[in-house]
Amino acid sequence: MIFAWIGAALIGLSLGLLGSGGSILTVPVLVYLVGEPEKLAIAESLAIVGGISLIGAIPYALKRQIDWRSVLWFGIPGVVGTFLGAALSVYLSGVVQLLLFAVVMLLAAIMMFRPQRGEVQAAHPRSPLKIGLEGLGVGVLTGLVGVGGGFLIIPALVLLGGLPMGLAVGTSLTIITLNSATGFFKHLNTLESPGLHWNLIMMFTVIGILGSFLGARLGKKVSNESLKRGFAGFLVVMGLYVLATNVPKVLSPPVAAQAHLGH
Image (cartoon, rainbow, N blue to C red):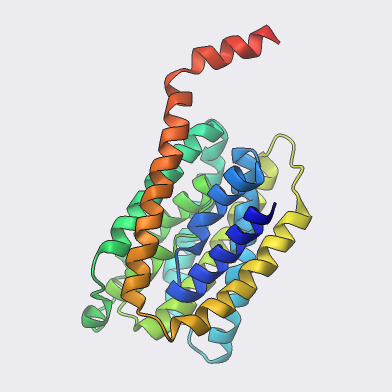
């Protein structure tokens, strides 16, 4: 279990260091280090990500570094998308959800490898329609695979919403909190046998919060661009591993079915 706690600390550290990306580790840590079933891991991930994001957003709210108009433009379509994604997840097996998750990890890595151009374009006029559509898309992803989507939300707020990075991070954390809460409660209704491990959720959330505070302190002393590239490389390795372990399960379902019938 020690590896699971290390995984929880990494989730918080990456959130504190990068402002996003930590939640994308939660499902793999729960599945591969804790041994949770895929669908249960996705529901628990949403609770953990939502808790960490909520606590992380509070300092930004106190400093008035949250753009509530963007929360509405991005957040309301995001909540709708999350509800739809969680409802759609009922029709997908846990293995297929993990495959989708692997694709999201590789997409996040690509986004992180790209050079940061947000500050240059932050003065562009806002586009509520584009922000709403991206919010809907990120919400569907959140509901389907349990990822917060900060790696997509922050660029959208900066490039489409015209927000400076100082406002984008707090606004992103608020949106992730709303999406995660919506997805979690919807998944509670769709799980065949809830059986949530609340002690695990609480421990991961607390360790993740402490890790995020530590990460925020360390982030002032380390090159952000180097960190992003290192984390992106880690995501590529993890994404390929998740693909390698789940593609065979999708390609040979008859074998699993026969084994099931033999019991």
